Length: 255
Image (cartoon, rainbow, N blue to C red):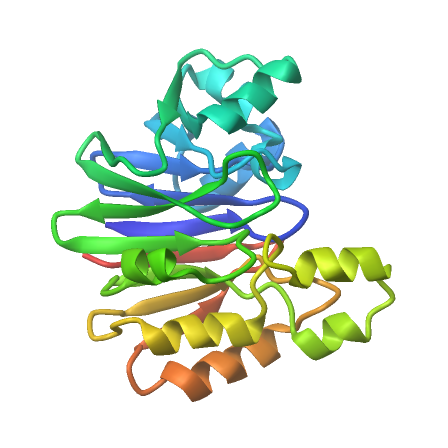
């Protein structure tokens, strides 16, 4: 199993998980043309995508979902709340499949474990994708780390983890006070220190890849993120990298 990003940040998000037999697109916040261009960069065509998993309805995660799904006639897995938002906004899906945030399911040879997270969306979830005993945890767009999140991500082999902002940079930014409170609040986004704390609390003995994701272009720097993660977990995790908005990140292999 391997995974890669088409891009990660406030201007669009999409992640690919590939078992060889099954290829999942997790979120699609880019136009159809941009999505296909970025997939091609990874050596994948749109026709190869088996299904789309959606985390929540914010535009940087769903802007391209409807058009991609209709064009390639792929099923879209999403919660009732997210599906309701799309219907209310006249986004049609050829094959919507409702996700329960407490029940797993399978797509091809991959097992999917959705889990609930605190974020300012209708019914947000994140996912753990597994093939056999190998587990990839995905956590972005989350305001605070809960005991449930720690339990779900414990013992993962790979982790795509939100490191949205540096607390000092956010506090000193030109953002309006209300937006700062929203970002740093319990239903906003994880900062560097929160993500480091998560990593320090989970079992890292199997963890091979950590990819910092959803970085703010105004309130964070990749160098700050890498330094914080390296100080906390470098002795345990062989590979630490950062997903960029324009390039995402290349293939990371877990099996």
